[in-house]
Amino acid sequence: MIFDAIVTIIAGIARGIASLFGSLPAPTWIGDFGSAWGSFVGLGASLDPWVPWNLLVTVVTAILACVAVSLGVKMVRIVLSLFTGGGGSAA
Image 1 (tube, rainbow, N blue to C red):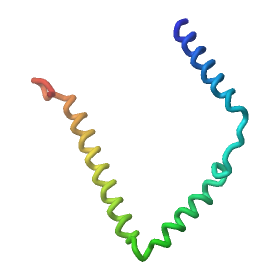
Image 2: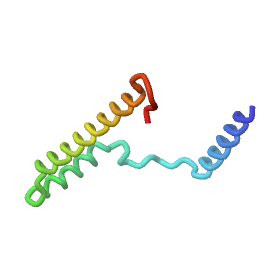
Image 3: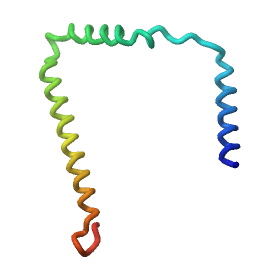
Image 4: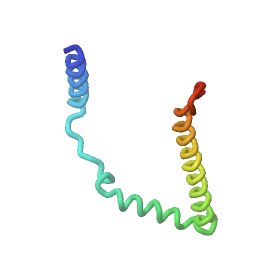
C-alpha cells in the first residue's frame, strides 16, 4: 500500500513535468541515424594519411582481448574461492 502510493506520487510528478513541455517533434537525426554514422565514418576516413587505422584497430582489439581474459580469470578465481577444499576459510 505504501509502495503503491509512492509509485503513484512519483508517476504523477513525472506526468506533471512531462505536460509542461507540450508536444515537441522528434529530432530528424533520430530517424536518420545510419546516414549520420556514415558521414562520421567518412570524415574519419579522410584522416587516413595521418592516422594508422589498421594499427589503431589492432591495438584496440588487443586491449579488449586482454580485458576479456583478465575478467575471465577473475571470474574463475571468484568461483574457485567458493570451494574451500574441505577446510579453512575461502578468504
